[in-house]
Length: 290
Ligand code: PLP
Image 1 (cartoon, rainbow, N blue to C red):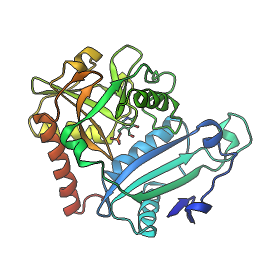
Image 2: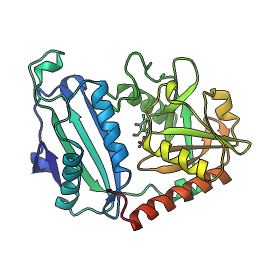
Image 3: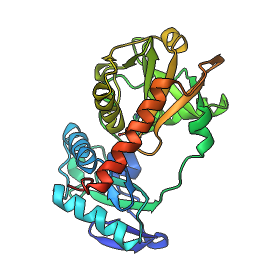
């Protein structure tokens, strides 16, 4: 495995960053997770846009422009001979003297890890997964804005630890106002009476690329979509529930805590299929890296 770090490639064992990197010292960094289908990176532009947005919110200048990032990603895939890949792009504040001031770090660390994509077990899509509503609250947007895809991930890690103890596939966090926010690595949707509901961005969530695509697909399919706050009780009373992210796409939920939802429902199936069709369509028309 060859890792890209600031313009050069290193074998996995030699791919190292400084212990003075503020990404390591303070969790001062951002990242993106992308997926390549048969050599084409799905929704690359949207991921780069979000990386730029995260960088802007933390006042960090990215060392590469859009074309530079695209080239670095495609070079990494080529170097590793990958077609179906999991790609992680991380940008940290970079090495600098100890201290919180970002000005101590003149050069960010830009690295890309790409590895063979391993599909989630088919069974999960056929039967659905179980999720747990955890006690850990999603970061308040005025403390650490969840819109920043930050490597400062303790909030989500605490939620993940709780979910794991509950034997759940994913942990769902409520926000500061007691409404459902999102999962540790996913956005959440419910279906009630044939209509789709997902928390709005002001709930304090990451603007998932998959979430955006699913909303668009639903609208194209004539499904009414509401971006609206909903409670834990509404989540448990839903007809269907699913979670989304770049690697799992549309994942049906069969259980929320002790409540059986009974997945996958009709709307979930429609959207999961539409998502796959969209990926294949983009692949065929070679649109993925445009
Ligand atoms: N919410 C959080 C907290 C995440 O970490 C992720 C992805 O990792 C998502 C939502 C889903 O985002 P995307 O669809 O862009 O992968």
